[in-house]
Image 1 (cartoon, rainbow, N blue to C red):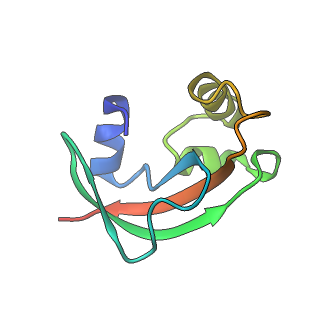
Image 2 (cartoon, helix red, strand yellow):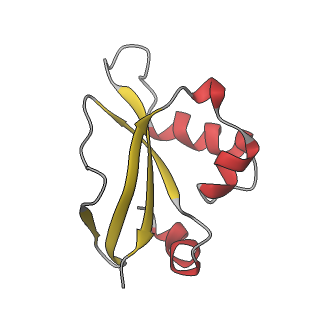
Length: 96
């Protein structure tokens, strides 16, 4: 997770993240450690199509708008047409 999202994760307003993986890298019910933040409890992991995401999905991911989220994803993952990977939405909560 990027440090700019730590406050939103701590506040519980960022509860999802979109990742690009060949296969699922975390499982529901597991925990993932985020340096500088702590443990995250993984609630669900599901493949998604970016063109099916909504403004509400973007807000759950800590963005003000869907366009902002899509722009950030494009910057982070510039070679999506040739990387052979899938988009996944990971729902989580900070584990206290």
